[in-house]
Image (cartoon, rainbow, N blue to C red; front, side):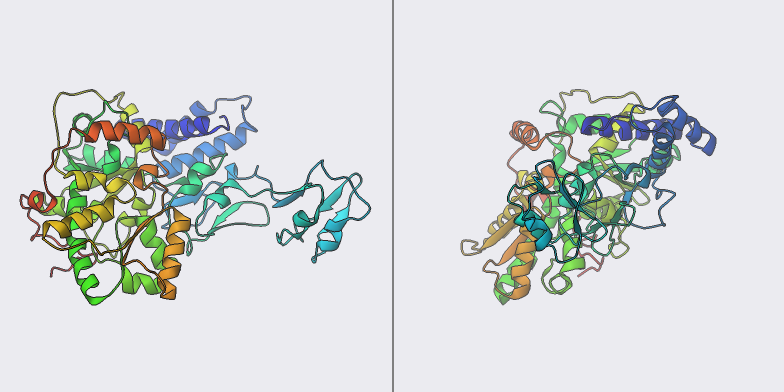
Length: 490
């Protein structure tokens, strides 16, 4: 086990792959799980720290791969979980004194500290982490810049301040604050934070003969290069055992049509609204801006839920599986207040692990597949949702020239916009909120860099036809299932 990002990603995906192999073979039992631990970390020496510690980490990763909480953590519905065995190598002290300390006679750091946390050591000043309140006054006072702020990557990545640490230095996630965005997962250099994985559930349903239908997010186009089209993805998923695949860009069309009707009414009444597609943004509103969640959030379901409800109406008894770059979608699928949503969610990395468990890779195809308009396909990028909603309004003959939009991408932008909305000083009429920078294509579980994905997406999207959103939806039974979050039919 190595500590660079590539090694950590490979390591956890390899465990997923091996767990899936056991599930396909019907041998996912305690004995085989224990054998897998020793195959992954045979010993007798460790590449990383301690062979026993590495084996414990593998055991906990196997539990996550089976949609279980780590054994040393309390049972929780949160999809984001901490593996304590991997979370003990980050610095506990937020402020540390470096070798640049001159041990000067004036000692301005000492006089600046109001908590008696700083004392002279043998060769430099010393900060007691038990007394330090992380105010930063000592760092500001040091004339040599010898005191540095060592903010842990997971805490730095969290947009809502949900991460703290216990007395042993282990990461603790406050579930009442966490928006399940997953940014901390890929920012932890030790791979100590992960998410529950539902691959085993999907495999078991396929083996049981259930009609398991994949739903691929709009961000899928471009994730695997410009040679892997939606048609190629669909062909691969069918070979993998899925009964069918539907692109969630079609759900984008459905959401845009429903949300545009809400926007039109709200605009006429002078009410401000936010979009409802980004699960992390919805969690941010519900947990940190509850008043705005009740008053300003769109009642329309996300594209993922729209497609799931469409499939469950047209294919009663089917199992729906969303595939995308988002961790927060896992929390949305578990939300009991949104009936008919996706049964399971998997990320692109999890999809690749599932494919490798069957020794498969994407194959090029001459076939074509498109069910969404180009507007629905562009839901994956910042501004795409709002543009699709405006397009629907324009297709209905409404004048949108005076509508003012605020497009937010990233946690800080979203919080700022919602703060303005809460204070009653937001100038814009509508907020498009996406917690990931760049939108869904910048999701924490993207398969390539944003620039690589964007180039490949543009190449693939050039082949899309120019169908209109509302015309496209006339081919689907939109009056047979609800587009409201609570499932009610208007």
